[in-house]
Structure formats: C-alpha cells, structure tokens
Image (cartoon, rainbow, N blue to C red; front, side):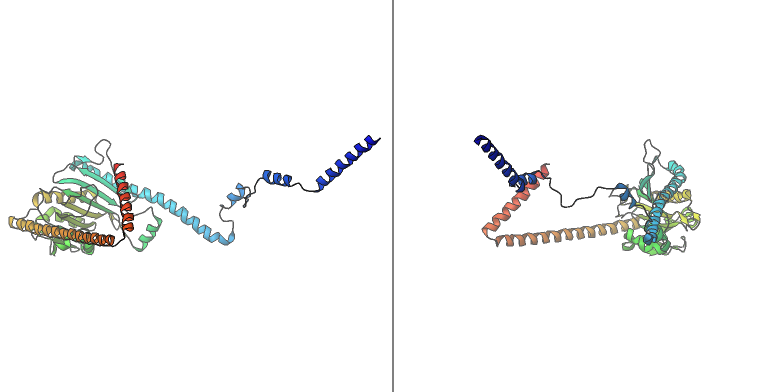
Length: 381
C-alpha cells in the first residue's frame, strides 16, 4: 500500500514540474530560437512585377505630359531618320564625285586610290569628310582630294545651317617637288575670304603683298612676294579656267613656306599647291573635270613655266635665308629662356632644401629615391 502511495506522489511531482516548465519560458529555447531564426534584411524589396515595370516605359499614359512626351519622341525619331538619310546623301555625293573624277585621275597618275589591287579607294574620315589619294606624276609627290560636305546627318547642324548657310567643298592639296619649283608665294583668293586664308597660310600676310592683276576676275585678289609671278602663272588657259570657274573657285595658293600639317603628306612638305572649290553655286554644279584640269595646269606651271629671273630668284633665296636665320634666332632665344627659368627653379629648390633640417632632408631624399627606382622599373618594362 505504501508503495502505491509513493508512486502516486512521484507522478504528481512530475506533473507539477511539467506544468511549471510549460508556463515559464526557457532561456535556452529563446537563444536557440534566435540562433535558428534567419536575419531579415533592413530593406525588403517586393518581388518584381515585369508587367508593371514594362508599363512604365509605355508612352502617352499620363495626359498631363502628352505634349512633352510627343515632342521628345518626335525629336528622337527625327534625329535617327535624319542621321541615316544624311549619311546616305553624303555618301552618294562622294561616290558621284569619284565617278566623275576617277577617269581623269587615272589618265594623270600611275597610282590612284582604286587603281591598284586592294586599294584604299574613297576613304571615309567621318560622315561628312572623304579623302582620295593619288601619286605617280611629274612635279608632285602626293595628290590629296578632300571632300568636306555638310553635316547632313546631324539634326542640330541642319537647323544651324538655316541661320548660317554653308556649302560643300572640294579641297585639292598637292605636294610639289622642291627641286622643280622656284622659291615664291602666290595666292589668288576671293576678296571676302582672303583674311581667313591668311590664317591658314600666314606667309601671305607676313612675306607677300597684294598686287593689282587685271587677268583675274574683280571678285578676287592676288598676293605674291614677287611681282614677276602673276604674269607667268596666269597663262591664257589658266585665265580661261579661273573665269569659267569663278563662281566655284575659293582660292589658289602656291607656297614654298608651308607650315601646316596636311593629312597624307610628311611634316617636312614645304612646297604645296592648294586649290579649293565649292561643289555647288546656287543651282549650278561644279564641273569636276574642268576643276581638275585647272589643278594640273597649276602643277605643270609651278614645275615648268613659273620661273623667276636670276635676280629675282637670288633675292627670294636671300629673303628666305634671312627669314630662316630670324626663326632660328627666335627658337634659340626661347630655348635659352627656358634653360634660364629651369636653372632659376633648380637654384630655388636647392636653397629650400638647404634650409631644411636633417630629418626633413632625409625624408625628401628617400622620396626621390623611390621615384627614381619606380622610373627605372617602368623603363625596364
């Protein structure tokens, strides 16, 4: 009997402990719960709804912004359409020019851009600039035709041209053999464009002067450093070509003092012939074959017939020698000035270094040594 009472007492205690344990939270259970619970991010992103996201890019949903969106879309579509249309127009103009010019160029040159196998052909420098190279002719080293067309592919440029009209241009650059050409400067230009021309060829202003010449149209000026040149340069055929192409011809320049870099020619190319034409004058189109005939007439004239008298040639050579000596003296003076300033800077640095403490000098020496080591390492690479 007492055994039964003891068993019942133990069962009652067990039930009481279980009840108490159920009512009080266990600290270990809390820790375990905290450890097993996954951390929640501070910013919870809702799941992406691609249908909702796509609707945000559909135009004309908000009536309040209809005009702005319509104008923006119209501008973008017009910009793209004009880009491809303008690009095709410029390419068509360049191809038509080459179609007219290439038969003439093939008769004049041993090598043209398309005559040799795997030739470069018409080179597209940009959407509005094309170049064509030729070589293999007497009196010249290189022939470069440069087509500078309107930026028809650019909407903003088209709007700007409504305010400031421009034209398409053909510029011919010819490198001349120095041993075949006498030392002279000749410029024939439209009066309105002469100032701009002197910025490209400053020798027309620094060493040449304007001279009255009746053989050219009244709309043009002639500048030269030798009064003998216009008479010999303006032969009857050249005069006829200039008069016939007056509406298209912008300028003609022959110089032995060229300083600007011309694409396709070496930097040392001093003897240069440049002729520039408009491709259009109103509704009239440039006759490409006649324009090229004028170019070749000037090339042959510069190499064969435009010659100075002995006295004029001696004076021209003497003037160029003085110009070279003055330029050399100026360059030497600039070098001396740079060297003097560098010496003053080095002396100033030396004085500042001498005024520092021993520890500061050590830091500077260590820094300079690191720089020298880094330079040597980079040089080895």
